[in-house]
Image 1 (cartoon, rainbow, N blue to C red):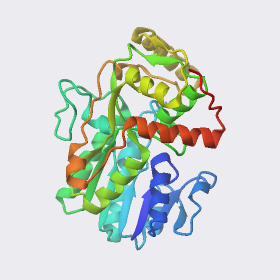
Image 2 (cartoon, rainbow, N blue to C red):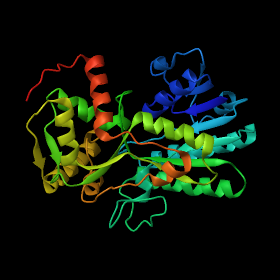
Image 3 (cartoon, one colour):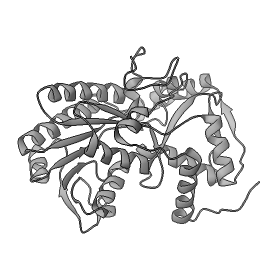
Length: 335
């Protein structure tokens, strides 16, 4: 196949582009920065300069492609002007889908987020879960809005599938989208000592290779208008760090940071951001998410697509091996 990918210089996008290229597909990769496109150097990858707001560049890059993976997104925890979330995640997605229709693209897979379904209240979240709590971030809200527009296009005959990854980790670009791997790296370097809240908040952690597999499976088997959660292992923060200590064989001190303190700190960071323009490390809405569990089920993707989950300990071991090799982290046993 000849496949067009947006967000190809990002964390998920780079891994997806290289996997497809190594499998013999021709990949048309959209990029804005030449330096960020360096990892995409491959005989089967053709680079196209542009962005998702520039329709002319999209037309050039999408020409003669059979399929599209729309992975690009504005996925920050904060923006000085929240409108940027909707400019990129909603209007940008509309540009991609409209041009795909005009170009005769047969199928599109759009990367959303499991955050659109909200937290788990009494049971694990599925694609059918009814949202009972308002969105915590403009990122989640914008992605949900984009999904609504996608379903409208599907009703008009366009072949679009949505995938909803959870908290992704593993080898690759250490970007904002790869925050879990950055946390793992800091821990094994002895630089991370915080357990948010009481450590009981549950999250879902998915290995990058599984997410890439899920995207490809959705392209091959996904049905128009369907959503597929691409998740991994459900674990509390305490369970996450217990596994990390065991797998890494490094035991550093960890202390629980109370949520009221984190809330106060995040409010101060927001104030400093307004005064000086520096993005906050955490926001009040991000801290509020920690008051809930985010237990996720990927059964639909497993049953319908053949999606498989890498256990957290196994994925973490592969991630640590990659970090130690790439960044020459001291691997002495500190037990």
